[in-house]
Length: 317
Image 1: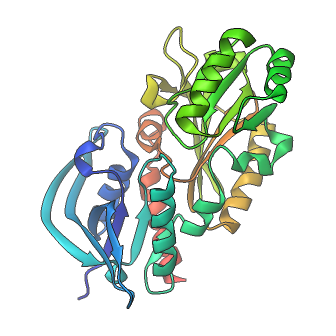
Image 2 (image 1 turned 120 degrees about the horizontal axis):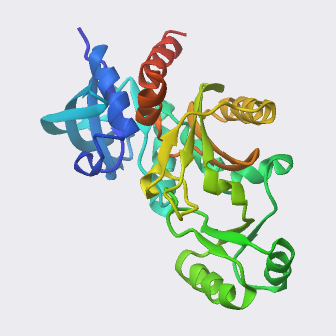
């Protein structure tokens, strides 16, 4: 019997958070149904001239109990990814040239046996904060810049309050609110020096009550939750101290999510997380969407099981 292997390209297993990490949760379901799960980091992937895709990492056993993943390392080894059934791209940003280079390598792997998700070409084509610009009817007033100019001044004066975000980070990191042009200019120029291009977006005060994370699996809405910021904060990401709560989607939010879901499926994006505030689309997470454990706690919905069963169905097609 040939081993069924799923390789997960992620941050080091030792750095994943067992109480909240979606990659470990998915891995636990893969183990439960009989797959051998192999974790490796992006820097440990290489390809030879004759298309041997070697990844150095660890076979891992993962069990999910009491809303927490427990893992153990079975063996440390190097494998040829062409022997895997599925390769999952799950490492966190920054979305930089290292990230893009790995996507290039895995695009070549797709020509062989493994099913690579999310599609590396789709990931490259859908930068998480920029891809929302493909749907201008759904997004709040926004401006992407590479240097400070008159457009920035006019935008801040017009919107009164804005947030600035680096384009290629995640988890609510380096986001700042600006209410005054004079002091804000220094913050913007600092952010530009540190991060290159940034996005400036109208501040939506309702974010103090929370934003919404909508999970998309194979183009369809799978579940949603509200992420509520800690008191006195406006950043709702769970990794930034926010907490998960129940929510329902409005008709407009459903329409937006269904529209984006259909688009993502065409792009080969199997698993994504949409972020919305005040019925505006804020971000399309395609690199390492999370929230599965929080949704499991809230609703008792096991999206890891849905992901694995849907993938198995696709492998049979």
